[in-house]
Length: 633
Image 1 (cartoon, rainbow, N blue to C red):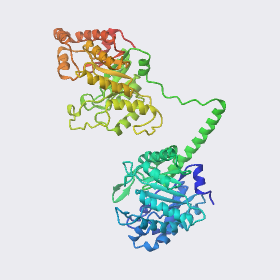
Image 2: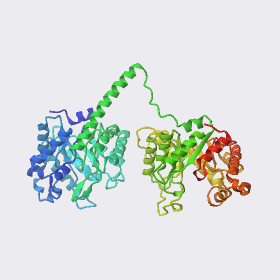
Image 3: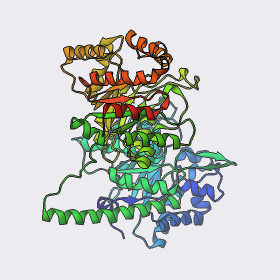
Image 4: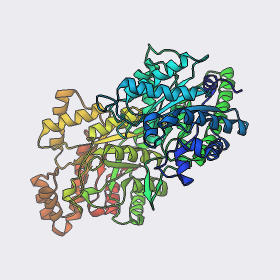
């Protein structure tokens, strides 16, 4: 005889089997048939399926009795055979375990009644209680190792099932361990609206042995739900004794094709999540709808590999603790940009636009020119002017890997929902793009695709907060671990020449409080106005310590100057500069370069760097400007 189920569960995670119904369907059993009746009609098939899971590495097999209650059996005219079907289910599972020669366990499966309880339906709680007691008594008569209640959405219903089990257990020499699992929707609540926190408190109060989540959706949605349940139970000072946790997700959302049902989640994917569930604190892991012996086989391999790694870590930790105190794991160092800002170095940043097609050669050639000219960092705009272009973080990554120049990724929130924000941030960090410029972005109506949506879930100051206070702390927006802290540097936009100075000052303050590391400004053609803005900020909040990279956009001609002044929001030229460009005539580019040098000198009074925007993507003009002012990295 194996050790008791709870004793074994306390030692290390147990792997349960996968879906019985999925395998029966794969063997040609139609959904319209009564799966539970197969315990009597095709017992060899049912036992063989149990054995398949045991060969795949399962340590717990569930009986084929999920729907073997009087109400569901009544649909097939089998309500009078409930006791016989349930007893046979336990016998077949036990026979499979004995045939395998493995130290495995039998969990007797109990599902919902398939009818609505009052006041929604016509079935009273006492009728539900009686139906559960009838089924559980039949199961218990064959001595399974545990009872597993699964796929319940109604707390009232599972409560009656658990109480019925406890009554049956009182008549036994030793009560059966109870595993109580609820199912949750995409919204993270049960179909009756119960939250993970409510479920955790209610099931813990019933003194069950294992609380868990099954069915629901795929592993990615089940994981945060069971994490909430675990945290709630562990934080509850009234917790009655030891409680374990389980997770048995579906293999994703089912898809219909050619008259058959398919589930998309692969065995490899389940193997990866088996490890994640263990790391979250789950003790009993398995699969529900759509999972097969191959899913269980990959989960077995993953759990075994994790156990070996854990033992190795334990040995290393033990050795290290005998030699010296363990040191905390070092995070990634700050970006080069952050280090230069912290050291007070003058920073030269230059903006580049991604290409309209998929060939990055011209952009990379321009980046090389800028690096050789002395640019410290290259800003990569994201869909500037709402024009369709290559993904900005792909270009930023290429610049860093192909050219060896550090980049700043422009990250507009407009058009991004919170899911995409999370995904893009993690992708950027994985690609070593760790300087993020948080900006609202240009409205789609002004660009190539005016019909595109502008919806967004977060504003730039919120994005900075998400980056600095969550991602850099190893958490996502919901406070769930992302594995390890990120090391982003976050920049923000500021218009030092804004018409509504009070509003711009207030907005900038929010960004600074969120954790901004630097700011980029609009092109500045009148430093006096910029100084007045900074004085206004200092009067309200004290001297601004945030490093400023002042915008510099060299003028190419009088026509260029007039276009910027009259048609580009946020850019205002003085009458003097416009007149100088008009008088320069064909020498406009040279005069524009002279003006940029003059402005540069004045910007040094309050800026720790410049943010150069090359006109018409003429990067060689930037090189001329840098050479003229004698700035080198």
